[in-house]
Length: 225
Image 1 (cartoon, rainbow, N blue to C red):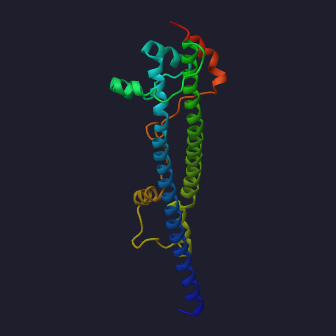
Image 2 (image 1 turned 90 degrees about the horizontal axis):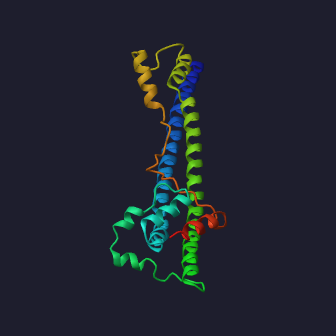
Image 3 (image 1 turned 90 degrees about the vertical axis):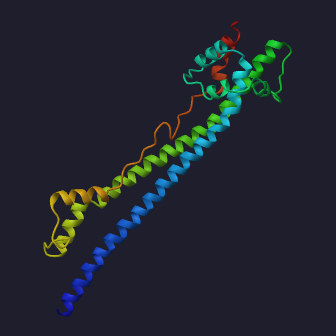
């Protein structure tokens, strides 16, 4: 083997090494991004707990299931957040839910309305923060899947095999060659799966618009006996 042949052989080895190194470097990047996405979703689920105290206090303030049902209907909330937890609270604990919450107004009716409005604004403020978090996670998921698509296109085993075979003068990529079914299996294992987050992993939030947009509807249902 002369110097030219040696140089060509070294170049082939370097190209194949670069393909392998790039593949594993890009795969590690995607795996780290997937783990980061899962952590963001876990943090979001934990942060959802911030909405529990005002929701529980709201249920206690409304005083009855029919009143709660009317308010939830007015807000277009079908699944009542944390309601099952509320039902299992000890009555003494329920009464304490409203401790420290100031009531202002000249009449008992006005104090009741203002308490509900204050609780709603607290909920709406928390939901706004969580909506931003929810949107960022979905954006991260979208961008990650775009990277997954690029990765799978860049590291299609069939294309890589054809490139290496061309370098080798149409020789077999792996000693003994690979059957079509084996190539397909290896190609499948090399691909990175698109990521998704279920509703359980990333629970959607109830839509809570600013108080001024729902105050009229709330006042109307709160005035019902």
